[in-house]
Length: 313
Image 1: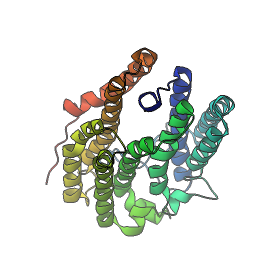
Image 2: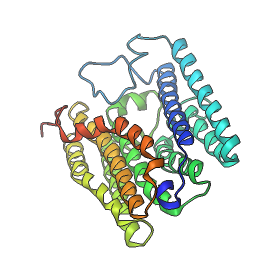
Image 3: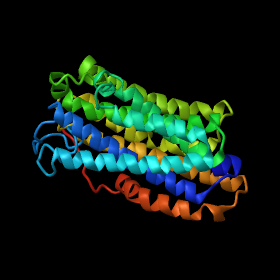
Image 4: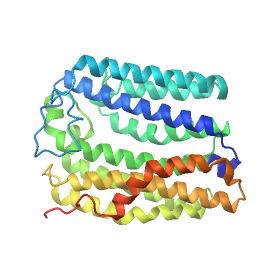
């Protein structure tokens, strides 16, 4: 988007941002696993359980120790901080603000004394961090400014992440509530969670549809509406089977695919718009190659039924 809108692109900053955000997200997942295990939220995994819930299973299955996981996520945070300090020194103090907020949200999601994920704010955090924090932070690193257009484009991905975390929490409702992890699903129940899931997806597509009409973005972003049939299928599966954690697993997988494929299509939309704007493709070819390598297997799984998506009514 920075390349298309402002003709700004810096490969080194792009690579550092991708690495930093990825490592921080790995740290978030391990921190979540670690503290959920400490508070007995995650239990030993049942082979018949939904594979998209209940943490990674690394601790509950005894594959590594708590101490090893703690050292691993500390190392990841330390690496993220080093990258963030370099980007702050080269791109400005605003990068530091994004970085501090992002790391704090990652760590205190389940870490005491805050544990905001246990208090019903985890889903909102995912919405904010997977749109504004990551999206606008990355945009600022490139363009050294903000853009309402960029915010409107990344916001749907935040709502889709809200849907993803919501559906992943449904199979863990009883375990979470008994352990005192009162996320939105544990607080309001699975029926309400189904509506939250569908409504957040609806908001994501509404923003995509309205933004070009209001003249805020290019009409090319409409290519991302190709994921609507996948979303409809996911909502249908969840609505019919929300009481059975195993039967909703195809909807969990579809939600991951919806989020990723929407991102791929938005990248394609801005690449096309960049060509229309007569931007120089030479400066972004390596970044596009990296994104193709990262995203192509995901896109392939959407169109080729590698993992069956059948479910009983």
